[in-house]
Structure formats: C-alpha cells, structure tokens
Length: 187
Image 1 (cartoon, rainbow, N blue to C red):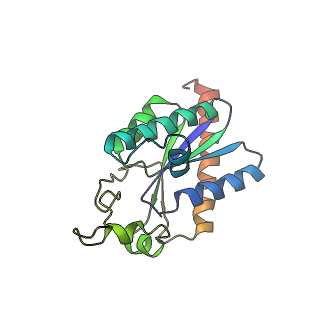
Image 2 (cartoon, rainbow, N blue to C red):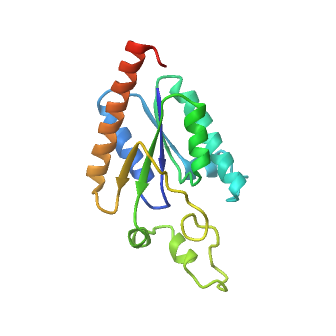
C-alpha cells in the first residue's frame, strides 16, 4: 500500500512515532507494520557494519522487505536513520507510494534523550578509548532531506502531537493516492 520512510538522527523519535502511528491506524482498521532499522540490522543482517556501503545496504534491504509488505496491502513505517539523500531518493524512485518523513530534533534534546549513551561516547575527546567515531550527525554524515513530504520536529512537538500529525498525513496520503489512481490512472 504505502512505505513511509522515517529518517532522522538517533534518538529523534522515529521508532516511537512509527509505533504510535501504527497503534492508532490499527484501531482505525488499517493493516500496518513497522520495520525498525536497529532491530532488522541486529536480527536479520548482523554482518553489516556502519560503513557507508553497509548503511546503504541496510536501507536497500529494509525497503525491499517493506515493498513485499506493501504489495500485500500493508502500510509500512521504515524507522531508520537513513542518512543519505541519494539512497532515500533511490527508494522513492524505485518503488511506488513512498513518502519521506523527516523526524528532526536538536542536538541538546538528543543528548538529553541519549538512552543508549551514543552521544556521550561520540562527544568524548578524540584520544579517549571509548570514543564513538561514526555516530551519524556528530562525526559521520547525515544529509537532512531538502524537501520531505512531512517534517516533524520532536524538539517542539509532544509525542502525542507528532503521532497525530503522522496519522493524519498517512490518511491524507492514502486518500490522495486513491483519487489519483481512480480518476487519472497515473499509478
């Protein structure tokens, strides 16, 4: 049905929003799934590193699984950092009904939310043995989407507000796609 690629830095709220929107849409009768980038990486392809090439492989694999679900009429939230604009654009070009949602959050808030300790480790002095050298957005590249289909700023919006916006966006997108297909045959 539709793939929603939620992109943003670690701790921005991608999985929280995806799970919250899934629950709300389930109640409304939609078939919805969530693919969490961290869980899939850990359980399905643990051989991947955090090199640029492996980060790209991770997203291409996630989007392939997502499309299998979409073909079965499922709305899929793909919650992954997904740091490269070129990869997000490839996914959007390769599959129908893909939307990009940028989950933005400022650095002080991300540091406060840092339940995994990633930001604390990335901000250690360079010579520190526990220094994390490849945290996306700190010491590794993150390319914010220049024109996302939806921007949700979790620095300023509550979790409930952000989930409500995401649910409304999905419902509006489904209606728009239905009317486009029904009336002009463009898909």
